[in-house]
Image 1 (cartoon, rainbow, N blue to C red):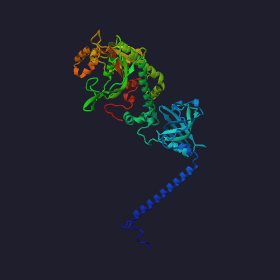
Image 2 (cartoon, rainbow, N blue to C red):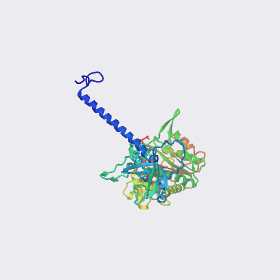
Image 3 (cartoon, one colour):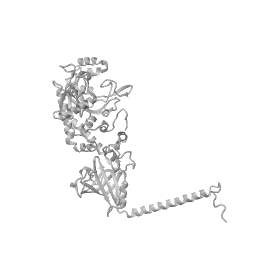
Length: 531
């Protein structure tokens, strides 16, 4: 006879139903199978550990805490060419991609904008476990790889090092990346319009890029952009230093708006308020009055303008210069024009690799310039626009569309992307601009353009305090608000002029890019304050 308590609930609360009993049995069987699988995996792992003859050739070594300095030289990916064929090298790079195929694993290793293909084959020294491990490493991990440089029969079009690949012998993970990334580097590097089988390949939009800027900056294009941008600053400095300019550093926290108007950022300053500098204008001019003669500065400039355009930022890097001249402000124009040509030549000659890298993702016509630079008077520009059908007065300021149109007209007529427009109407320039001595409707001021967009605005400054006061009154400016500015010229000041340049805008236009956020490392605009 069956035991009456066979189906008793172990909790003591009653008899278990047949359905519940069946469920219990299934769960017990499931647990037993799971335990068996785990035991089998553990057993297999032990066998693999025992039999893995390559176990010392791969893995995750202890964290680099400066325990030792191994006698190992890491080489750069861009130096790996056929000249190093059959040589064994070590590189440290990011794992760009990996793909398993049978007993092989293909990887692409990336170092800034340079990439090389690597391959592992199961053989006497490379085990299946090593190949499996390599295929499982997450993208963007930093790895140390030893391999032999091998010349390939067919160019590897997907890598910068197209004539060689790396036959990998050792593979160690130095820093692991998360397995799931908010964006893929391949997608962020892909030109728009490139297609895969079955449709358009994914690309990454601007907000996603900027929200994940650390990853975005790793793309070969961005690596190239910001190396070239560093070149702009270096060439700016070098060009002016050889002309006896002195680099100065001006305050960024100031007591009054440097450009006048309301477009300033106010900051708390102890028991009062201060402002972030819109320009180093006042301090450049004070340095000239202090007999430095020729000065330049590279630093942050802040503009509290609610402009959400392709070319405006609320914080950008200003390349500013100011110089005393002898008799005519065209002495200043000659220096600035020559300085820009030095930059353009330097970028062309020293950054050809970076320019080519950017052009792969963002194609653009090569930047053209004349030596000496083309210089037009404002009325000549107006005449060209009128001949093209634009209706405007001779003293009207140029609108952005008219600037771009004039740029196209100048390119077509003079074959240059850079030009200087001189003698602007006085009415559209700041109060401190020196009027033209022969035509009071115009001024000793100028703008400079790249691909039809303004990249410098400058002028001869009024250096006489009484005349400066007169011009300020004409602009209905309260003299008390600019007293310190006017007073800076009361101890004697030489005639001088200069200009201010937006570094990110120069880089954007030289490369023919469509948005200034592409040339700002961590852009700030009215809608973005992070990261």
